[in-house]
Image 1 (cartoon, rainbow, N blue to C red):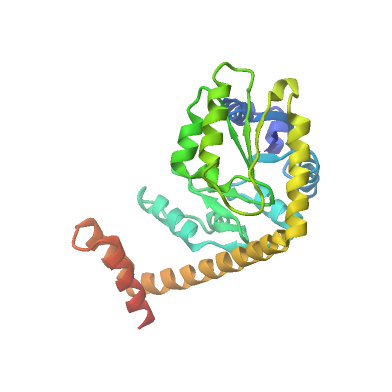
Image 2: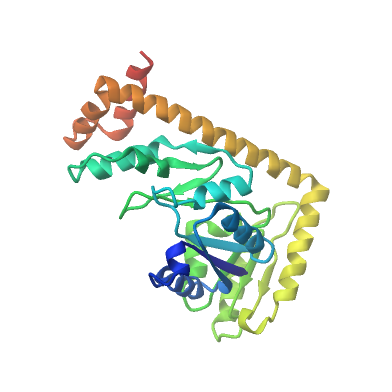
Length: 296
């Protein structure tokens, strides 16, 4: 898998701050066996950010962006990516509520500009931020899911326990030249032997990415999976499923916005929150009451 890191921020280009984020991301990706092939730095400009992302999409399997997610006018990353992909920005009320509570616990009133961070591309999944107000955003635009296991990190067993292997279209054991790689390879074969689904049979490949060993086979397998998706009709199904996810995400955001607005106006939100904190109600029952009373 080829990864690319894009750092957004004019201050980085001017040398006003050091890009420690990119170094951290590269280290963490290397730890899980993902090789960073490219890194770009771009200023706070929509057109140039889009050009940078477009180039990354032409050569990388995974793109990780950092910077430009904040509330100021020059924080343009989310809008630039949404524009490039023709995705509408939708208001995510859960993020907005998180922002309100972040400021409330500090005795402060959030400025209106901070709610810009609650706008995310349709179909995207927000990644919670426990240290600030700007959420991360995950966008899935792929048709082939590759799960990479690295010997020696326990990733294979953790992946089995977490059910991650079940989403794989292709399994890859990277760093296959390590002594423990064969054991991981065999364990994955044993697990996948339980999968007797018709259609695409998930292959298990070996790679040594830094030597480019097995990479060509991986690329050919990706092409084979794409051909399978097209001939089986699965590709069109996936496109419809993605459109459905985008529709439901937009509807969920709208419904949540209306629910929280109504509950906040009549005071029921805070009342039920206090009931949960006092252990008078469990969250599920409180949620039922919130919805029922809001409908009324």
